[in-house]
Image (cartoon, rainbow, N blue to C red):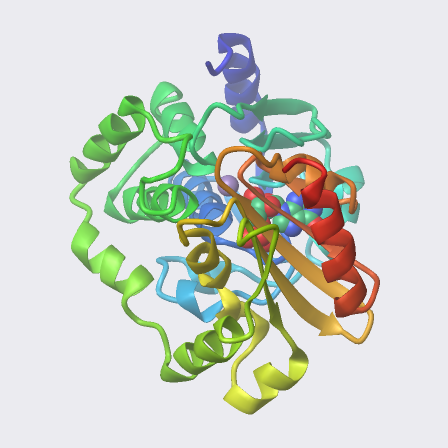
Length: 322
Ligand code: 5GP
Ligand code: MN
């Protein structure tokens, strides 16, 4: 439940603020980008000056989002920030190079659904029972009577759809579907959004997918599956690390698999790992032991070690639960 007291404070802070900044997290996903553009465009309709700040490159998948061109790296224009929004970001480190904006801003609003959220804001609306940050935001915007048009509703649809595996994960409730129905009321074209999101994979990306999946390693009678994406695979297929989206979910969806791991070789001794689980393994706990985090069924971390060592260490950690 969104606490009324938080809403009252947030509403008066928004009214009192002129210059508002909204920051993305590192490796921004659909929930992060959809949510931040939705609230930012709505605040602009309320007459506020809004700065959209990115912490990383925007994956090509999301370049079709309305307003995406507004996201810029941090610049000298950010001398005064009355109110800063961090969305879908569990801790300050997720903001990457923009972490310093937390201290520079007069007030910080932290809206998120990660269990691992550290409540780093002045206002913390952290609700792990929600499917996505986008869904929290939609209810919040409705309750505060914020402007919502077709574009803003489309952005919220993208946030919820992408973060729930197209409405299949545990966080999805009847209320989620009711919220989606309300979004249709603003005239969204869900078919167009879905084709943009899910049917425009590049051929090179399909080639990377085949290469990576063909090297899948299995452990514990096929209950753990590990796929590596090395820098040479990226070079050979003319792709980027963003093109790994969807690989770990494909591994997870195998019948025998309880835990699916994707290891991305960012540098010789820097590995970004993604973990997806089904019923037994707490992904958030496993990733916390590598200084990462996320949700019980989907988490990640960045580890400074060789890809071989990270695979061994991660599998060892998962085996403790099986
Ligand atoms: P992904 O595996 O798709 O990168 O991320 C899955 C989930 O884990 C997302 O909810 C994301 O926010 C979280 N996550 C990914 N990497 C990190 C990390 O390095 N630190 C923390 N705290 N969460 C992460
Ligand atoms: Mn999310």
